[in-house]
Every structure is written in C-alpha cells, then in structure tokens.
Image 1 (cartoon, rainbow, N blue to C red):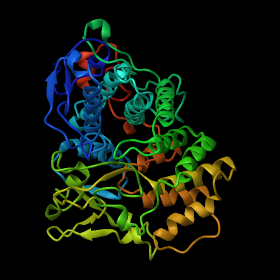
Image 2 (image 1 turned 90 degrees about the horizontal axis):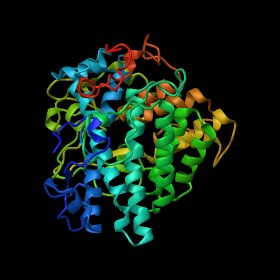
Image 3 (image 1 turned 30 degrees about the horizontal axis):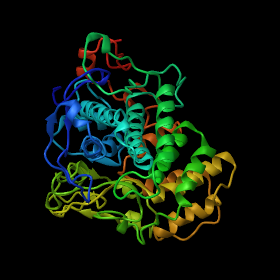
Length: 462
C-alpha cells in the first residue's frame, strides 16, 4: 500500500492494492454514510458492479475531505487573496504563510490539497477502468459521468492553484499539473510524470466535464448530476474568458427549473438535507464530522477555533440595508467579528455548498455583458435577482464592475475571490495577479520523489 500521502507520480500507472471505502455498503442516504476504510486486492475491489459502486462512493468521500471541498479549496485561496479584509489569528503556521503570501515548499496544508486530490483522481480512474462491469447502458453512463465529474473538478482546482492563470502569458507553455488518466497499478522510476501545460489541463477538464454533463441524469440524489457539470463548466469558461460559452453553461442550469434561490440570504447557509440553492454540495454527517470552514471561521462556542477574524475593511464593503452585510456576529469570548456562513455545528452537520444557484445569475450577467449578448436574460435582471434577495432595491443598469462587486459580496469566504481577481487581471493589494507569490509551490515531497517534476518559480529547484 502507498502511505497516507502518495505523490502524483505514485498515481501514474501501475499495481498497488486499492484503498476502498464502503465495500460492504448496502445503499445510503448520503455519500458520506460509509463504513470504515478497508484495503483489498484490486481484482476483488473492481470485480462486481456493487464493488465498483462502492469505490465510486469512496471517491465522493475523498472529495469531501477537509483538504478538498470539505473546506480548504475554499479557505486557503481566500486567505491567499486577502488584502486586509480578514486577520489570521490562529496558531497553525501553514495558513499564516498563505495569508502572508510567503509559502514554503513544505507547507502541509498545500501538500494535502495536492496529494488528496491525486488520491481521489486515482479512485475515479479506477472506476472509469471498470465500466465494463455494467451491462445497463444508463447505469454505465451515470457511473462514468460521476467519475469524470470528480476528476474534472479536481484537475480544475489543481491547475488554478498550482499553475499560472489562463490569462497570464501563454497557457500552452506555462506548466500546469500532471495529468494522470489511468489507474495506478504499480510504480517504477519509469512512471515519474511531468507537468502538463495549463492549456492541456484545461482541455482535459472541459472534456471530462462535458462528457459528464452529457452522461449524467438531470437528478441524481446527493450525487453530481448533469447541471452540476454545467455549473462547473461555467466556471471553467469564465476563467478562460470564453464568455458566450460561460453564459450558455450557466443559462442551462438556470433554465433547468431544478434549483431556486433560498428565500433569504441567511437561509442559503447552515443547512442539512436537500437545499434548492445548492447545485452541488458536500454533505457533512456524524461519520465524517465537521468541516474546515466551521473549524477555522466559527467561534469556539459554535464548534470552531475562531482563527479568522473579519475586519472592518470587509464590513465597509456592504451598502446600508444589505442583508449580506449583516450576516456576521460578535464572538462573545473574544469580541472578534465572524461570518455566519460557517457557523452551524449541529450534530448532523451542515452542508458545504460548493456551487450555489446564485452564482449562475452573476456568471450569466457578467458573461453576457462582456460578450455583448443577452443569452437567457438581460444582465440587469440577473443582477437584480441577487440584489433583491439581499434586500437591496433593483438597479436600472449594470456594468461588469457592478457584477464583480456583487460577486465579492455574495461569495465572500466561499473560495471565489482569488480566482476572480486572477481571471480579471486584478492585483492582490500591490501584488500583481500573475506574481509567483500567488501560485502554490509544488510540495517538496513531490519534488523529492519525482525528479521529472518542475518546481514553480520563486520556490527554488529551478
């Protein structure tokens, strides 16, 4: 077995035993309701449809890890994008490095975001390699779509964090991350992988998510469905500046009639069970316990550490009467201000929304404005959907800057800020959007084990 933190090269090609979650699982209401992890032989793990389904559940369970969509894919990029809106007051050195833009190659938080992603990608690849187990074409398509959704989403996060943004230089030559598209079955020195360029990774992400969109059903319980894939595609196209495609992808979700905005902004958070606004969410259950957003943003009485303090600079961004500007509370123990988005610490836990329906309106509005189109609706109508839900009066006209302002207010502390700044070429304070300091280092552990992989500029090893 590989150890707990395998390298990307260890997931290239080869024959190890597969770590499988929930092989004895017999149906569940949540993809996190699983039995303890067990290690079994590859042939047994992938020899029946039931076992392949269980491996897929394991991939979702991995996806919910605190180092991925269980928190760090939202928290760490927001810390890296911060310029005085929050204060890190915790004892962990790794997040302090991120917020100070002085990251080291042995940063454990960053290493886990890399290694856990590749572990999950490997699980998805194993599922894709076992599709022949399914004789029912519809089920085979669904299983394929879910595995590709997971793989595509993770490669999108990896290339945005460990590579330069699409609009910085030439994406066809800028190094991205290694593309590992086959399951691991055994490792030799010949299996060391290099970094594919940013364009190649984006191309693979689009291929995976487009195939997922076309393979998945419209509804799929707590698992990814066709519209979740479209929502992620809208993010990918927005990052690339492919605005008409971004508007079309967001419009497909809006026109589906599968989702709706929560009646109030507050009701979009701290929810368990099915939530109409959540296009894709991570369900937190007693088996997996808590999440890193609650852990680091919430007060101690709410189950957190209270490590991230909201500063007055951020509160001043909201207009009078904006419900989003009132969605904060004072920590009774410290007097610090905290966001209410990640406050819930009930026994059953609260879902972590990865993509909310509100995002589709602002994506469609911005994309239409930039492309000069009115796909689905006029941009002012889309923006007013968000403004009015927040308790603000409708506006008569909007600009791209208006939309970007609404994105910053609506999605504060949800992991969008760094990517929005980069794709629009805006600096983080005085730091340019394409500065080396705003790109994660490749973990030193990966560099040490894989001589073929290139470190990012500014971190040595060039």
